[in-house]
Image 1 (cartoon, rainbow over the protein chains, first blue to last red):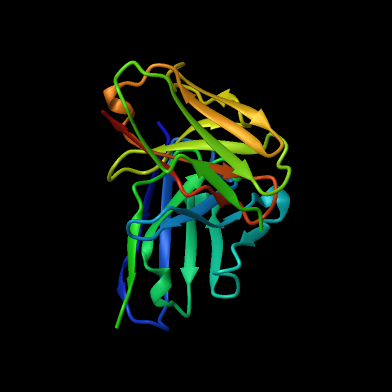
Image 2: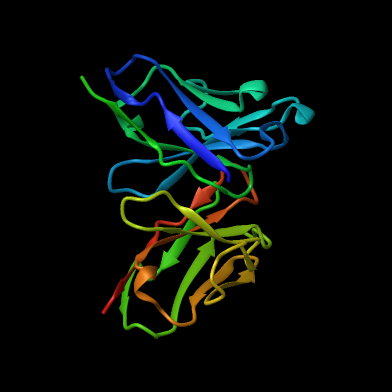
Length: 118
Length: 107
C-alpha cells in the first residue's frame, strides 16, 4: 500500500525557517517525481513545486510565490522528500501536502500544518 | 499564468441527481486537466486525469470530458458520500494552477 506521511510542521515566526519531510512507503520512490501542494486555512489548493527523479537530474520547479525561498530535495535511499522553507511569511501559513507524481497528485499524505506568526 | 475558473461555486442536489461542474482555462491546455475531490478535513483525492481518464478505484459514476479551454465533470447519480469540494487543475503550463473549487452538497 502506498503511504505518504508529512511531518515537521509547527508554529514559526516570520523570517524563520522550517523543513518538512515526506516519508513514503509502498512504491519505488526513486522512480517518481514528488510534488508539494499547500492549502491555506479555508482556501483552495495551491501547487508549490516538484522534484523530478535522478534520471532527470532531480530538476526542481517552483511556484513564483515560493521561488528563491523554498527548496525541494529528495533522499532516494530513505524514500523521503523534503521541503526546506526559508524566510517564511505569514502568507505561507497553510496545510502542506506531498504527493507522488508530477503532473497529477496521486497518493496524498494527510498534510502537516505550518503556522507563520509572531 | 493560466487561470482556471469553475462554475458553479456551490450546488445542492438530491441523491440520485446528475451533477455537472464546468471548468474553463484562460488558454488552450489541450487535455492536460485533472479533477480532485476533497472531503471535509481530508486530503484531496485524484478522480480524473488527462481530462477524461478515471483513476483506478474511482467509481464509474464520476466522469470528465473536454479539451482545449472548456471541461466538464459529471457525477451521474449523486451519492451521500460525494459531499465534497471538487477542484480542477491544469498541468499544461507551469505553474500548475487550480480552479477555486465547487462545493457539492446534498439537498
